Length: 317
Image (cartoon, rainbow, N blue to C red):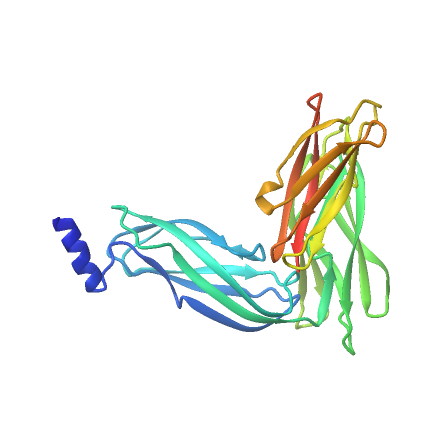
């Protein structure tokens, strides 16, 4: 009874036992241009009367990458959280995103998670395709993909060089077309597994000094089954349905019977499969992408226990 009364009095006085808040709770970023990657700086404050332990940071779009978080905040203590906003996949026009931060207090008293709403208007002068480069290859193999930079301005930018945060990635200038520059990206399958990193293209334009393309490389161990194609991109306008057909076969001539597929539920991928043609299996992947980009890896389970991994990129524009 006394605890409830004290809590009510503290709430009436504006003193909350435990409460982290973003200041301000809504932040207008103004106009952004596709290809720029601004750092969004958020101020987080403990406006309560107890020590708060910081938990998980969640954003409504994969285009927002979270920075380092403080472990704890004492009453009235504040900290700055930096978020990197990647703009390559953003649609033009008004955009809005939500940032949510969970936390706990010493006594478990908490009003709500800390939340902040970000808004911006996005304008496009240049275009980079793909906005997410996902490459799948076999162990000890090589794979190549092309990244294209379109700039229809009177004086288009020039790509001067590149760096990659992943080993085994090389890039070189390729033949383009008027207003389009092409970079041929080659990856070597030296490390089995899935790695995420960044391909950075340096330019001569001070407004776009570095174009950052998220990079996902999946190197498969030598397998007795395979998917064709070995990587799938599901791209559509936000909320519209898109589908792709995949063939599963066995180089050893055995039946490619698929019993189940997992891994796509988190991004809304629906999978159906049927036998044929011949000893192969045909799969259909369907999705209605939300705005932004996601990369997942499907696991295709065969009747005899063999598992094939299929990288899938889901992009809503």
